[in-house]
Length: 75
Image 1 (cartoon, helix red, strand yellow):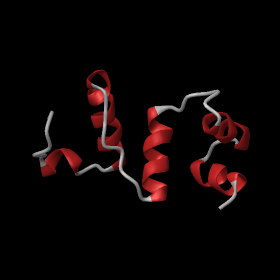
Image 2 (cartoon, helix red, strand yellow):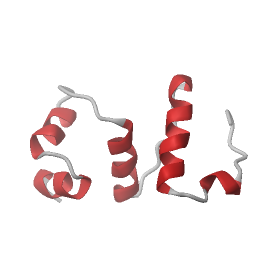
Image 3 (cartoon, helix red, strand yellow):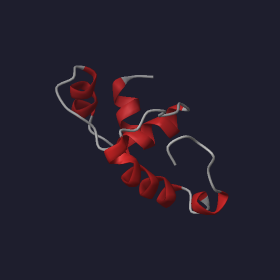
Image 4 (cartoon, one colour):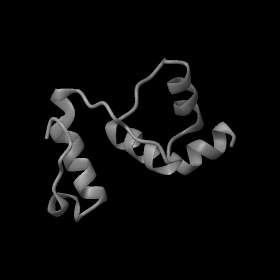
């Protein structure tokens, strides 16, 4: 997959992806979660201050997430 294809898949500019790859930029949580989903990987570590934001974003992506409950640590 090329950078252009990956950027298109993620809905971001190719230059943004290049900046991320070279650590010249950071990515929004929403983009990081979308990338993880599109590429079939997990984001395992979430800083404590970001957990509520992550929960809200995930709930928006998967409406039933709150009804399924969680047994993961830190929840």
